[in-house]
Image (cartoon, rainbow, N blue to C red):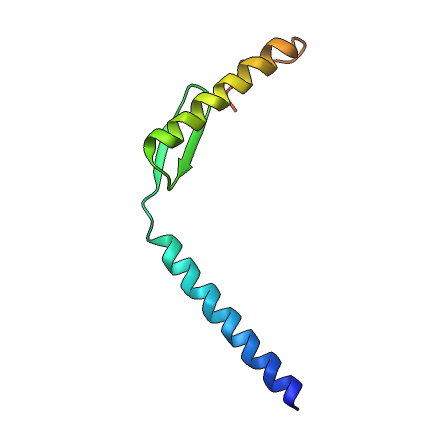
Length: 76
């Protein structure tokens, strides 16, 4: 009987923590940044998201040069 009460209490606490964590995350400011081939969405600073976009474009260019048999014309 004590085990069932413990499981119910633990489940309720987990459910409560999950609810409040999603409420806190939903309040953040989300930014959308477009690069030539990528759409990036995040809640970091815009310059940080843009830097990730630059790095992704660089990775894409490296793969385009290495994998010459594949079509890299279409955006990801």
